[in-house]
Amino acid sequence: MDGITLLGLIAGTLTTLSFAPQVIRAWRTRSTADLSLAMLILLLTGILLWLVYGVMKEDPAIIAANGATAILLFLILSIKAKHG
Amino acid sequence: MDGITLLGLIAGTLTTLSFAPQVIRAWRTRSTADLSLAMLILLLTGILLWLVYGVMKEDPAIIAANGATAILLFLILSIKAKHG
Image (cartoon, rainbow over all chains, first blue to last red; front, side):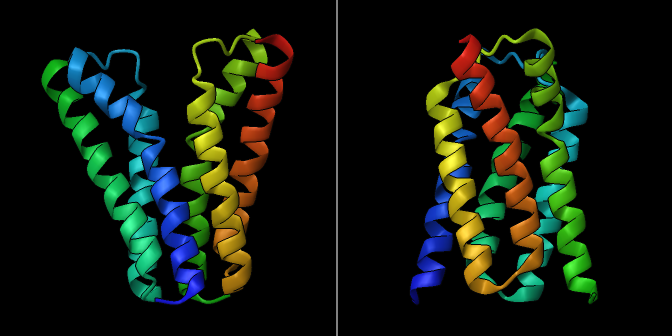
């Protein structure tokens, strides 16, 4: 793995990790009423487009970061769908 | 501009826009006490690394998206530094 890809993977780990507290909070409290559905859908759409971009560019750092963040966002949205 | 770059710019616009409500709220209320400083610094570090990654890859979509998001995060952090 080259240095640039490693840098991208570190960058992706940090930006994905910054979502972790929100997921843990939503998981524990089962409460997501204060999270804007519009914002979550906007963000998820953007993240999924970045994922497609990463696949088209064959860029492993972009694929890994946005794949992981998409999973976290799906988790938050599924808690929101179930518990409001 | 090729189609893949356009896709990246659209993806970046969406993910950056999803921060806008938070910036507008912080600007209006001058209140950011509920925003975790650790999370903001983690996110800003990740975004700045993505920016370096974009420059090294010469990828305009990554540079534009993370440059714009970094500016929004600096705005939030400066409001937090001034008003707590």
